[in-house]
Image (cartoon, rainbow over all chains, first blue to last red; front, side, top):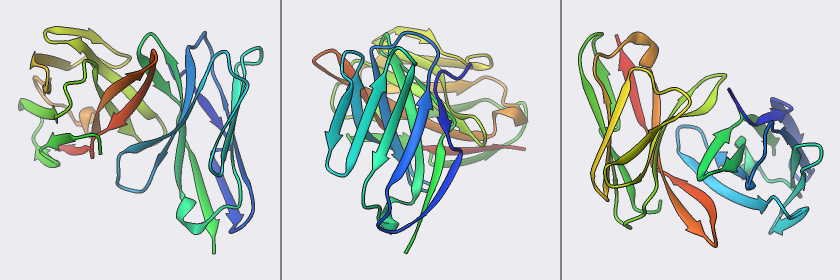
Length: 109
Length: 114
């Protein structure tokens, strides 16, 4: 069964706005990762947060992790049209990842 | 792209025929993975390998087998393809860094079973 579940399933925003995507997972994890997939392409790793971390930043990305609630959020600040893609969270444990179903982000110019 | 190639990139086959997909990496990473991606399901793990001749099942392994006789190659075989196996198949490798496993994906193989 799917470990990660993203919310919302689809998000449409204006360029320059912030995009917030949420993920919940079910069991214990070593880390929580976020990936991006452009249409017709493979997944690209964005950011990883370890289970003992609460917040991490990378450029315009900010990820938080709340292990007590088994949830994570990904914030993309100052979005660009090029951020249009599908975003997946993945729960990492025992050298394996379990992916959610993905969020489709559309950024309107 | 982490030196990962998949072949073929596209394949159309008929129900009941055997199909083998190949994943090749150039960086000698120990862990390799096969996923399938279907609308509404995200990515689901089929099989993975943690070394030559060391493989294990994932979430959706029924109807699939794998082999890894060399570090650089991980083969996924559909012994008798069914229409339910129409999907996009992704191979990935793991680059453990300080014990944490980021994965890097190949470009995918689109398989259609008629």
